[in-house]
Image (cartoon, rainbow, N blue to C red; front, side, top):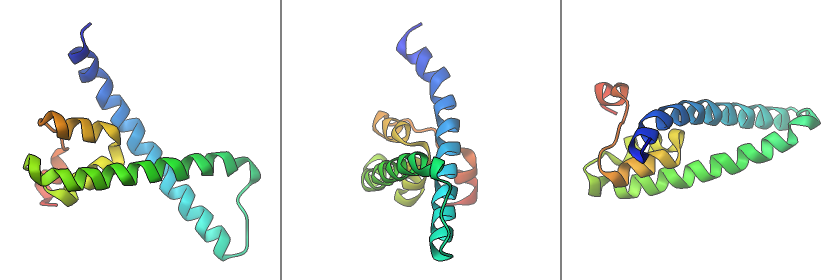
Length: 112
C-alpha cells in the first residue's frame, strides 16, 4: 500500500475518533466547571483524563486558529474551516495545505 491509500483509509477513521474525543473533552470540561461552581469535585480517577482533555482542547484550539488564518488564502471560509479543524485536528490543517479539503456536506449546505 502506498501513502495515498493509507490516507484514504485512515483519515476518515481518525476524523471520527477525533470528533468524538473532542466532544467528550468539551463535556468533561463543562462537567468540571459545573462541579466547581457548585463546590463539588470530579472523581479523582478523572484527574489524568481532565489534564489530557485540557491539552487536547488547547492544541485543537490553536490548530483551529491557524486554519482560520490561512483559510482565505486557500479559498475557504475562515470560521467554517476553523471550526472544522478544531474538531478534526491536524488532519484539517493537512487538508487545507494540500488544497483539496474534504469539508463535510452539512457545512456546505447550511451556509456556515
